[in-house]
Length: 252
Image 1 (spheres, rainbow, N blue to C red):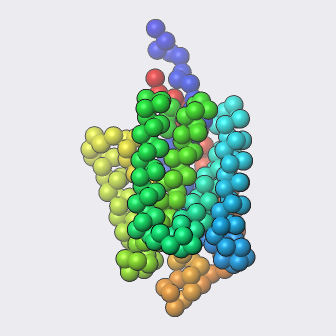
Image 2 (image 1 turned 135 degrees about the vertical axis):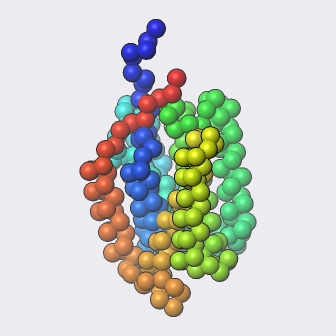
Image 3 (image 1 turned 30 degrees about the horizontal axis):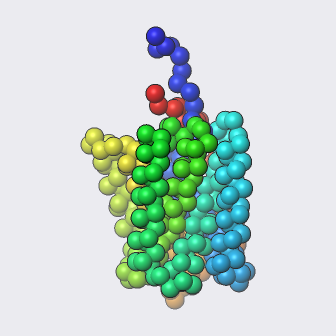
């Protein structure tokens, strides 16, 4: 018997309150940072997507090559995924003319397909099992789809649904509160709730980011995208440094 032997560590962090705080900040940075490159720098959605997709691919490669969980490189990869999610969703919705509803539907199908193939290949989609190159590839592919879907959902809610940025924030905070209630008071699968929460934190960050930098006449605060991105980046760096960042223990 190996009751006293510790379980091996996964290459992703434990899911704690600190994890979710940093995740929301990262998704907000993804919105302001992505818009800074595509709009403020006038590089356009396609060029912005190519830039951030390259950075994301490089970050994933570093993650897979690493032998152990490293907080800094993990959160750099998350930020890269959320920026490419922003520019890719904007490119699909606006440049390709798919629209928010069409883009969100397509991305939801891609997300579900990624989770299904991952489960069939590995037997689990729990983040605690992310400890080998194949599961890591599925993990980061699923995250990219979830970040892109979240951007489309955020824009759809704030713009097409006419709820505005504050209305969108209220909607997604309420949905996350519901997920928390299900986590605390029901036996709903924790893995399912994790991925639902992971998706929902992205549109929350998207509408918060838009609220910060969009013009006053459009319901925003008209802050500089560069300034907002820098402040968010510093806040993330500080939290990654001061909050406990431990690797999740791999499930049996």
